[in-house]
Image 1 (spheres, rainbow, N blue to C red):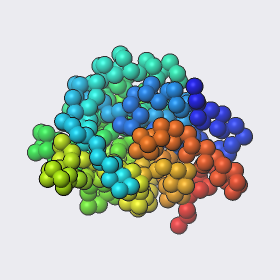
Image 2: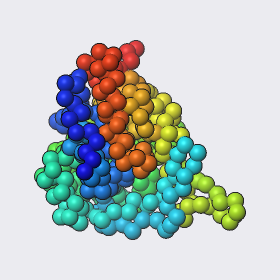
Image 3: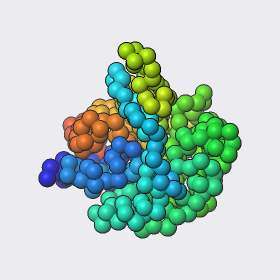
Image 4: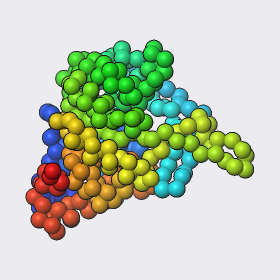
Length: 312
């Protein structure tokens, strides 16, 4: 068994990250939707050596997802239209969470819904479970009761969801922001004022691809979320802006494939980073990112994550 990342932090700088009542041993987190529920990567990477894992998004009921094809490679990126396929909250709690809990893995549960009540019910149910350390709220979902507009594109709706989730559980609440907006800082401020412990950004950028030979969209759902290195400059810009707009911790996501990528987000002001699409290319990526960060900090005499931030 190759446990890439074991003992990475021996004699290392202080890599700890604090998000409200949650302390991570280091700032490298596996992103939701790219690492399954944990066991999928267990023979490749030591999950306990990472800061945390964000499990595949969970809804109240099981979801079958979108019709195939669901994935399409693009230059420097990946389009996905999985459709939030998942086993549902009860199957997750009974069949997936025990494995994570037994291994003392810091577990963040990504929740998603089609109404404010869905989110509140999920927060209440998951928030009671031993072994869950925080919630990540996916507000890129369409609000079916409000005409299908995504919660994350409207500050008022984003704040409503956040308040309901915060009121339903005592866990730290991380709100995952959509980049498909005119002003992401307005959304960030709204959820911060509504009680979010932190924000994570960015979720995928809406895109599509066309098969010119078949003269039709490549994805079965036509549109998909673009991730990977292609979106990193956009993600980095948005993280920089949001860090300077709110007083809560910011977790950077988008195209992180190397330690250098991760360090850029931390220097922009993020307290932590999530590694996503890179895991699909190389399942050991997160461990390599962490090792590279430790090496960089040691080589350049940084003693803590806080010292990496660019000051005004």
